[in-house]
Length: 354
Image (cartoon, rainbow, N blue to C red; front, side):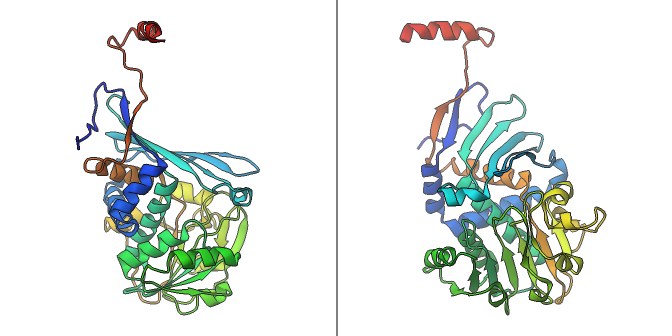
């Protein structure tokens, strides 16, 4: 197998990872291992947080949903993700979230990777969750509740099993078919899977609660009396303006950790709070600038909305895998005339081949 050149100067060919090839990559590496690997890449990039260009995602909202661009750069490599979020899509037979992404060289602007990111975003989201929980969850957690058993559910469960040693996952969804789907997919995982009739039942006697619902509205998935002391909440469903999952009282007694404060103020659970309410950015915990979990009875909340640096990390990880995996094709994506000034001449000469 020929090692691909990921730093071309004039190459018109760009490695492209299709959905089919992404699935081959995931199954070659293994979903749980790949999530753990991406979590390490995210952690490494958060350690160099101050190098990155940072901006809230560029969002175009409509009545049906949202289409977003998520760009960032570390000064050498630029990356972005195109992603949508359309909660009503499932009822119409479409995915709620779809995505693709690009990496490019900063020095000449040439892309070096073009890939699907619907699957990769699910892996990245689980990786970010478990990376945060490494610093915020109680010691030796064994049981996690998953409220919302849609497309992200199994990735989260496998991530917490692989990295933190979760043994039991308690499932609840307003749609019993979603819970049944998740339970079937996790049947051979080695996890003790418990299907719960109510959210209250799901969160009883757990160490970690993950909320991942799709409704685009202010909702109360968790009420204050459902959250005991010492719990870590991984809130990943509230990810756009006007959409939340937790009662405000939970936030008021939690230590809240976020990815990028300006974005989370707009999109996260903390849009319910005053603009000056104290939150801690996760990179500060990872670099030792701030504390994460500091006591056994502390309620920690990772108010995760997804940030471009995490997607950058996932793209960087996948790019690195192409040095030893051949699950990609080359796209003739860039015009590359022999004389950079003679683009028209290249087009004219191509007429001879028609």
